Image (cartoon, rainbow, N blue to C red; front, side, top):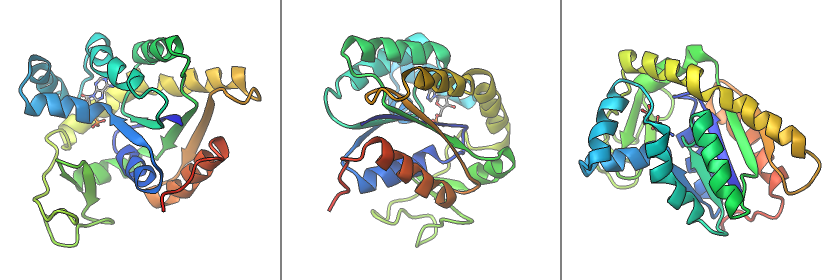
Length: 231
Ligand code: AMP
């Protein structure tokens, strides 16, 4: 399983990855978390990332490739799920190149297609348990105790980029730089359709994560029929 979840900010990529992670023996590599880790350690890349993220822009492709290539190639034969990387055509081509070199190209790309009018509300209501990445939403997925992570009881926080101003910029970056990846992966999947081992692209529409989840699971089971759910 070498899978990518695509979608606009607030489309629920993190929620869907967490559900896949809970259900199947896969590892997840999250572009935003790799950057947030650099920020919390105040590395030179982290200092730059902090500024870029606050502006709702994207980090340069060269830095993302430097951070992500080794992690992805290092997966070897293990099942993995990518969330938030690649986010530009340059990154997608870079990723295809490094995975192609080891003969382990992506096999499933799922695009979460959520109407724009519902996502801003979601992002404004989103609270996160930073150490684990677990997310909560005050309207439809609140924590059991206000302000606390359900599993550890530790405090929840707001992501500094989950505010109206930054969100508008993130959405703009998404439309300009990330949305073209749908077409990129869709066209690559058609060229290998029917050949068994190639890339499958699916577009999954829905207004909520609960609506999209069964569609995602169906796509995963169809592409990886041998995948066993955890006990
Ligand atoms: P996310 O947690 O996926 O919403 O990412 C938060 C922010 O990190 C984004 O708004 C970007 O500023 C930055 N970021 C995350 N992934 C990437 C990527 N693949 N390329 C460039 N910037 C990224």
